[in-house]
Amino acid sequence: MNRRLPALLQPRKSPRQARSAATIEAIHTATIQVLLADGVGKLTTTRVAERAGVSVGTMYQYYPHKQALLFAIVERQLETIMDTMMAATERLQGADLAILAEGLATAWLDAKTADIVSSRAIYAIAAEFDLGEHMALAMSRMIEVICGLIATAPDTNLADAESAAFMVAVLLGGSVRVVMEAGAAEGDLARLRRELPRACAAYLAAAN
Amino acid sequence: MNRRLPALLQPRKSPRQARSAATIEAIHTATIQVLLADGVGKLTTTRVAERAGVSVGTMYQYYPHKQALLFAIVERQLETIMDTMMAATERLQGADLAILAEGLATAWLDAKTADIVSSRAIYAIAAEFDLGEHMALAMSRMIEVICGLIATAPDTNLADAESAAFMVAVLLGGSVRVVMEAGAAEGDLARLRRELPRACAAYLAAAN
DNA sequence: TCCGAAACTGAAGGATCATTCATATCTTGA
DNA sequence: TCAAGATATGAATGATCCTTCAGTTTCGGA
Image 1: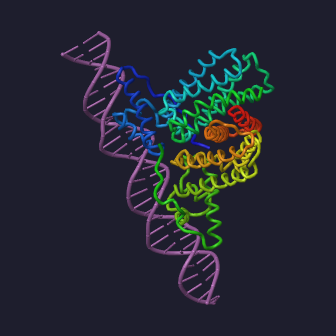
Image 2: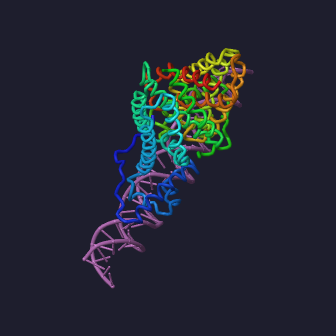
């Protein structure tokens, strides 16, 4: 469906001096800014470099090509989200299904809204390149985690725990994505924050 | 966030002879094929024309630019989906909330899976250009329709019907999108078909 | 059969963009 | 302070792509 990722995805070199670390950071935030301001279609190396206050060549010292840069950004975002979710999972071990569902939904919303700007940017990148596979992988890891968590609930009696976990993951991922891409009006996010935990809890209760 | 749409969105001229209608159709299907085979990034006018078996110039006789073509395709898809949903709405007037929720979910799944290929392609196009607004509009129309439908349910007692409708729309739209973009494995779609109606019904029941 | 309109062709113009590399500047340790 | 490595620069290259238009082919009615 989408562009194949080139072989070389890793950063070209690691920073040895302090200034280069700052440069990398500047490039990252510039990329996200350009992405949100001008869209994926106008995300050019020149524009990013300009916004970051560096020259194009500098970018190529750290990333072998544009896609490696985008990949790095997505990767970072994905990791912090995973961390948040893992922390929540620890906390929710052994809780009842209702608590568990609400906890997962809240954690997901927290993770995604912690840096709304980046989150929205990620969606744009993922759509353009074939990070579909990459994100599908992240989702299946999420499903596994949720599945394991559900098994620890004392009141669980699910005929098909995996389907339930799949469904929870899909409901969380999908609804938040749709709302954030649709402009992420504050009101809509507030609604989601109120209703999504309830929806997840209701689903698990019904499936149980 | 995304590229602005150029002023001229309408087709350049309407077909007068039979062959031109066939040409337009060929261009449309070719576009979707290229989109799915090579991704948005490689969706070039030349490639589409080649696949459609026409010359580039021919394309420009019907669409003032590439975006107009993509816009037309999205538009068409959106319309058929809307039609399916409206038909379902008629059928579900006055039904209980549970029936209603399941009916909506099933209708949505039917609409989206009727032409999986096109549906997936649409998501790709919408991400690239700023059809975000356009699709947000479609979604808010959906919310209105659902809201009206909910009001006709005899067992409705919702404190905030609009939030409930919003939530149903978001759950439907999001979950299907995520699954289809993640490669749309047959098994996942089957799961969704089984669980999504249940999830919607459970949510509405809990909110009522 | 013939003609004007409709539809089609595809090479070429013009613009954008990713990537490179020879050169310049800065940092650090000795 | 100085040299060597690290980092930054940005004009130039080459490739890709959208869009145009002058000319050709096909269609349908008279």
